[in-house]
Length: 376
Ligand code: FES
Image (cartoon, rainbow, N blue to C red; front, side, top):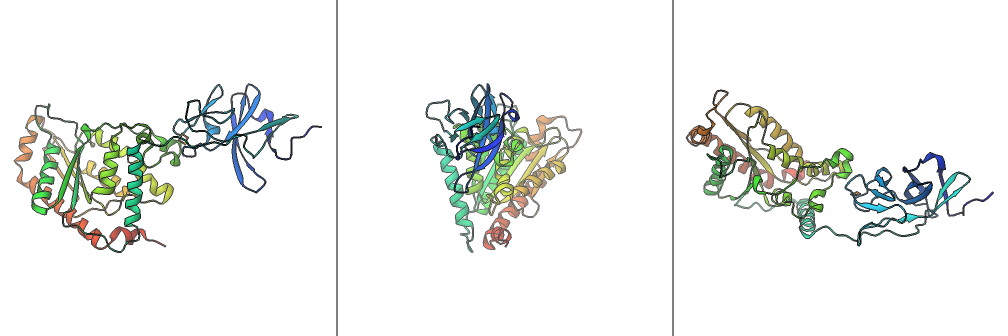
């Protein structure tokens, strides 16, 4: 009876892996190290490559097979199951392993026939963001003091889709501009406004639903698409801003669709807490401006408060301000004029911005985040 060489490990009976399918196994090399392999049956011939995608560790045995090419189920990297190489010139590769079949039993060697390599690098803006966020977190972690700048940095994010071509101005954006002007002129803040409608960024592709670890930071969509401008939001929010003020109109009782497009792309920020105990949002205060011709301010505020609290932001006194003309206000063309004439709304905005800026100073001065996160 012919047996495979000593270097081979028995993994399964040949009929356990039907044609066109794969199975994952953990074998051990001669030094006791675990080797995760994916064994494929292509037309009755068995091949083994690493089960761990060289990109972010996706399970290749669960990938999609097309001929002898397997596509990683997490973000779509491709490999030949015959030698672990990328089908594209200059692409990344994974280890491939010798396979032996004897008397209907499949054996795999833990010693690679070909060693895989990570060759490709993310584009520069992605690498820069990744490095800058890591540096920022390293700077604030464990530090007992933080510079408390006199000029608090306030980031406004306008999520309306209403632009200048609309017959009237956006009420939520006008209110945000008022808030930023107040922060700058009266509180000495530095301010920046990002208008989501001016950014080119894709919706979330739901990698988290495949596996929590498939959702990486910075987002893999930003890695794969050089033009993706979520990078600007990650950068401003995670590094630059002390306070973020988000404004949204109410659309069918909820925040704007652009708002949700943005927050779903922030799943990768929140997910770092779950998967890596890594808190990327440090020392940030959030506040909200919600406007609508009809009601639902409290519902939208609840959603916004819930998400931004999960992200790791804290809130000042009266963290949201809402403005609505009520159910029967169908003359939406008058919303902007009515809003700008509302001294009560303006006073509420000033109070909310003041509360956020004051809270930012307290958070930094007392090292609030550091003390909360420093749990042993
Ligand atoms: S493509 Fe495999 S882990 Fe990203």
